[in-house]
Amino acid sequence: MTPVFSWIYFLLCLILVPPLVLSIIGKTKARLQNRRGPVLLQVFYDWSKLWRKDQTLSSTLSGVFRSTAVINTVIYLSVALFVPWLAQKPPIDGDDLFLLLYSLALARFLCLLASMDAGSAFGAFAASREATLSLLVEPAFMLTLVALAVCSGSTSLSSIFAFSINPGAGPEVWFLGGIAIFLCGLVELSRMPIDDPTTHLELTMVHEAMIVEASGRNLLLLEYSYAMKMTVFLGLSAQCFLHAYFQFLPVGAIWLCLLSVAGIFGLAVLVALIEALSVKLRWRKAPEFIAYALTMSFLACLVSIAKGATFR
Amino acid sequence: MSLSIVEIFAVAAALCAVLMAGSLHVKRNIFFYMVQTVLLAVVTAEIARTDGELNLYLIAVAIAILKGGCVPIFLRWMVKRLQSYSDPGMMLAPPLAMHASLLLFALSYLELGSLGALPGSALAASAAASLLLTGLILMLTRKTALSQIIGFLVIENGIYLFAVTQTSGMPLLVEMGVMLDVLVAVMVAGLIVFRIQQSFEHIDVTQLAELRD
Image (tube, rainbow over all chains, first blue to last red; front, top):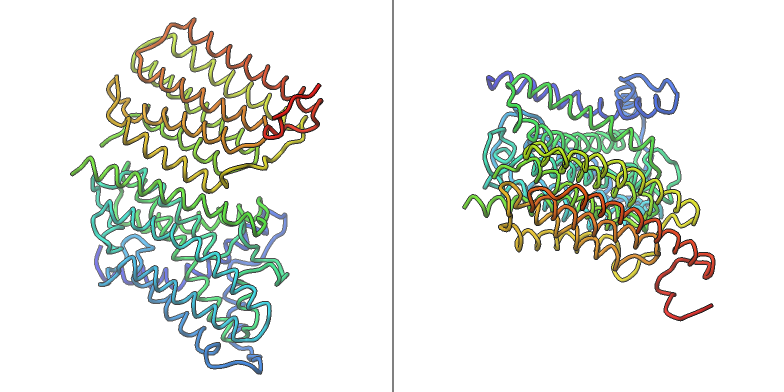
């Protein structure tokens, strides 16, 4: 595949996939609840409405709140640039897995500051919840990526997700890694079993309550960076499953491009299914759910270490 | 390292047991037990295919029907009857119990990974040991008698997996006898739990330290 084509493919996906993921989740949930639901382009309409709207700003605001949305958007755009969430993504130097982890942590830190900056108690509540969740889920995400890195012998993300049949990483490591990243994504994006994103009770929400003070273009940027984060997480998980599939049936470059986009949309439908069928966990039960993600990542580590031991 | 089909399904069954340790929901545990037993039936059928033994096919079908069908249905009926949908748990919190059983899984891999009497059964031995140890953890960390029965069944699955993968076929009569024993044991244990419920009005085994008439 030529570099020009892969850049065009990547930029098209970068623009179109994040809003479409949100639309697909909304549409699937509506269908499951016997509603017709919004049209697939609804997210674009919403965002253009937010673009035209004025901001309402709290009187206690400092510069942190105003700059957070912009900095977060930049962080998530750069994450989307260097993380291989699509097959055949153009390679970019310096794509270390720890850079991904700490970019996410930096963005989260700024988001926490901004939610407390607005001076509303709901934001501070949500910030404390988000801090607790991230504390629990970060080891799981890190261990999963490290397990995959052990298999490929490099911490560079593009060489981990390189679609080569290396003997180190069998389908089982990829499969476990895919499940672990998907579960981590549900927690990181505060989706259903942890937090209900469609409720309007700020007392119990995590992500929605953090951005409750944002409006207008600020809100647009926060929503956009949220969609980008979701795409990156679902994309990484889909890539893991695709690698597991690739170990059985190697396919061509064009098919990989199509399958990776289809994988992201498929996982978005799965998120919607989980949201329609399950109930929100009590806050005290959340660590038990996250423990499953941690178990999957531990297992991936164990398998990769065992395989490494047999190969050396 | 390429895994044989027997090993893949045996390890998947062991993972089901690990996931059981992470949940206190009795019905979810019963579901995982059912999946695990069906996986063991697949292991048996695969061994029957490679060894060309017709006996083992019968045993696989019997396991899938009796242990994978009848026992879970009976247990679910008991859950409904006793109204004990969730176990309070003791000693270890479920996430910690799950991680402890994962540790035991790794330990049994290290200890038994090289022990395999038949070719392609090395991992199956460690999966069987891990099933046994996870069953022990389940019995140690559960408070109600019903959950302890499930833990016992997991231990029994481990013993069966070890026997079927490390020997080249057992006599059909012995297998059938063992399976009937398990079925009867579950029934009797169920009856005893009903009696305990009737005379003590709970099935919490930690409260059963003193005699009563």
